[in-house]
Length: 333
Image (cartoon, rainbow, N blue to C red):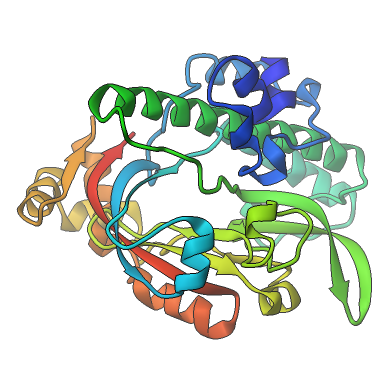
């Protein structure tokens, strides 16, 4: 467990899940430095023990998608994607371990905030100075959760490849990119003309480094980092590329999904899971999920229109549109 929490996707590759070439296409080359497994509770580790290689519930998914439109041919060529290609998109994270870490530190930081003279208008905004003992403990634990997420996705990548090797032996399943969301990372950025090291907290956001950045793979150095934006199982997802302007206005960050238009509770009042599954089937989209309620919570109508979100990100200069992908099969955790 501790080796996984410090090793991330590199640990998974050493265990036979995927190949070393995958690591070139994973944020931080598959391993977030500075993880401290000792800061993660036994309860969190126990919750993760049987969950490696699983998607989880909520908005997590594995989706088989078709590239239906290319917006930027040169960047698409660099990303090795073309109209008509079939791609597989995976959205999941550190599962029960990450959730438990968040729950525990939320409670601890509600108390710690007062000790540091911080007034919280809402308990959900619990925080503490990053250089404090609890701040450093959280950073160490959170980095472990990032490694857990990368290891989990690497295992899923390997399992998907095994399935396709049986069904479609000639299919190539090269990794485009694996990038995290809901993280806090120490990065160098230019602020008011000066380079500074700052903690960039991306919540519901993803890294979107622009062309030339040394932390993105050499294959994407000229085009910018691939930016993956999930939509809904009934609409579309998008691949974008990071921009130089995004580095200046948003610390190299972009949205990572469409974003909800209503709560999960509201969605279950409006839709039934079976209804959503049948509606998708009539459109040629297959849904597989153990939970009908979970499908209702994730009904396409419960989310914002992803094309509008992507157009806004493109117009603002946060990231450039490269390709639109539409779902064929969606597997929900």
